[in-house]
Image (cartoon, rainbow over all chains, first blue to last red; front, side, top):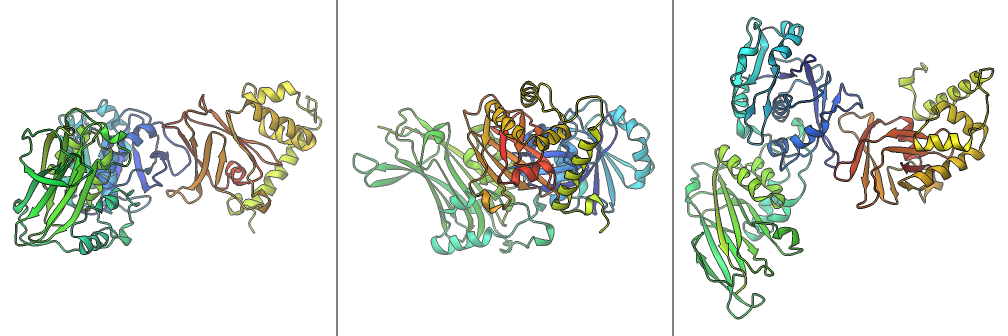
Length: 394
Length: 183
């Protein structure tokens, strides 16, 4: 399916059309406004939670933490608006949301809740919402696409001629029906040239952490979006990128002095006295590919680590034979074992959605990190993640 | 010039508002209740605490008729406020400001990207002060009626509200000579 899509959220008070989706200043909490006025709807607080990462799903999908959505009629409570607003965001990102008075090729009548794993959850009173939308449904004509959670199509009344129904178990199923590929998230210019510069100066940069750590800029308007400056590579085999783990130990008595690097098998029990963990991604293939390499200390140590580096990220193009490396110091004041987590994402092409997803990695909990890894796998990426436990102090 | 409200600039709107205020004051002449009576301190206090608010036009008219009332009102607001932001140090320049710093909070005006004619009023509360959370924002300009708006409960120490850019509230906040109170 192609073309512009108008999103109509079904409520028990009648249909509410999404008029506009606007990226706001990140300092602003996301809001739902009534008809471009200053009236914010009561669901705004829940909507903000639905947007902002790590709990929210919108920022994870589109890379921006704050939005204003204008709708044509009040949406008072509940969570059946979630699927409609999620789809509106994805359509907006794909430059396919029919906003304001723009003509629409299709009209989406939608009701459904969405959980953190992008599973569509059932909602109540579908038949009442359907009845309250009868005028709008009659006017929608042949371009109507009705989306409800799996098993709830039976609550719908008679369908207008030409209308189609999608019973959705996951958000991905609806996106596929709308013709929005998971990889079609709009690219933004401005980052990869910087990465390329970092690569040029120092190989795949350990310093890319600072770059990745910055706040994502507002989503660019479609007209300003540039094609990716680095072309996708051909015949790149992600499996030829190896992930290696090393422990760094003092050659003398203290981590303040010289250190040696010992290769380890992740999960292998090793003696106490680990100063840091080093993780490398080595491209053993004949062509270059893109990697995102993260190493992080799990647990709450990060909150108390001050200036100590408890996470390190490298990202960019990894040429044949090249090695990317990240290094994280063990929290020296901890006397019990700590767990390091490393995550490697490999792709044949520049994936800004991955960069966005990892931009806030330093704030993720262990569970968030697991969920993120699962979502990256769902995107069809080559994702490898390992844990390695060490005893910092001898 | 059409004279339409939507076609007017901020200055013209202020003139019209002042005219309406004067007309309303004139209309009160001959009404049942005493006109021009100075609100009693208890009535003013009840207004400040939110117990019995005095209608905006009525209070504005009283402030015009009794200039000394403004100092009394300012004193009561200062006494009952959880936090306040004084007039801006560079107020003499007269330039509108987009940020106000007070004891216990910082207020910023941000343009709303979703609507060019709207402005976000962002209030960041210091922690642990002020406590309890403010429920109203009042701005007292050096002349004219005070502007008051209800505040939602803070989220993560911040309160935000959306207002028309040319509203009296936003104009008052950006007036460096106005005093901002969180009540």
